[in-house]
Length: 394
Ligand code: FAD
Image (cartoon, rainbow, N blue to C red):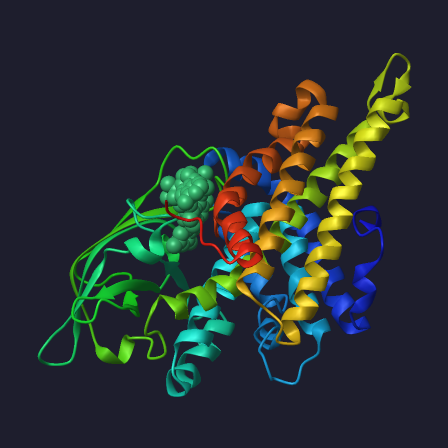
């Protein structure tokens, strides 16, 4: 483990936090790892891990992390980041499952709900008794969702709303209690957000089949046909896409931690392999060309970890712009992609089998590379900040 945290960033945490992380690491090593290859191949999430993971205090301190003005220092955000890192270092779907609730849904409530709504919902979000998912992307609108979002919300004479439209790629929807659905107000054209009961009349969920990445995590295609939602279930502080952008800004930081964890997991699996596999009468790890690849992988992981730690410190101080999280998501994803490819390479033919562990990271990295803003979209956010010119459209 120490090899992946070369400059000991974990020393920024308190002894108690490190103990929780050690317990999490131990659980993941002993209980989760033996299941991963089988469940990945089957395309199913190992639900038996969910409750024990929740009971490992995964969520409560997370609520404190990154809450501006809450009086908690930068270390709290780093603690949250390390929990994501630990999960991703084991498996990208486990980390995505966690951040769907602790990142995406919790952020939707924290940023979008009124004080009264937060008082009612947040405790349930934290203990996972209200499970929710973030339903933004649509079949025809991914990168251009800000301007293109076409799901509609029509206000009714009794104050309720009628939602119509389709959503795509929604992670964890099949086991959620509610879907946080983003829809355009038919009257003023602004984006608003609603908590929709997953089992409500007019809601249809179809599992997306045939995925070659993040196979353990389920993604849904959602159809909303004349779905009635009471005004009380509208997130009162979401009044335009700017409020959604504030949510995405926070989430890209989580994804940068996931990308860092995936790179670390692949690097460690590769390191373990080359130190035991022999060719030409010597371990693979004793060859210069293999050592060069190990050094590059470690450099990628260390640079990523330094980047996310610094980003998280800045975030906790309230210095947190779109381009900051975009840069972290973009760069850690590039490092991740390079690392998983090198890891797969040094493991040779076994590197394309699930048994050697690097194949899972290699495949899953492709999903992480594309979600929460593709490489191009994050680069354009940075480019706009650098030049003052928006290059998203011609
Ligand atoms: P497109 O927008 O069609 O882009 C295709 C390619 O074109 C990309 O390479 C992109 O960079 C490039 N491109 C697009 N526009 C430009 C431009 N202006 N300039 C240059 N290049 C451009 N969404 C949710 O709402 N909730 C979820 O829980 C969720 N989970 C996901 C889980 C997985 C596994 C995946 C794969 C996706 C998930 N998404 C989710 C959706 C995800 O955020 C989108 O896939 C992502 O925003 C990209 O949109 P797209 O796939 O439609 O690609």
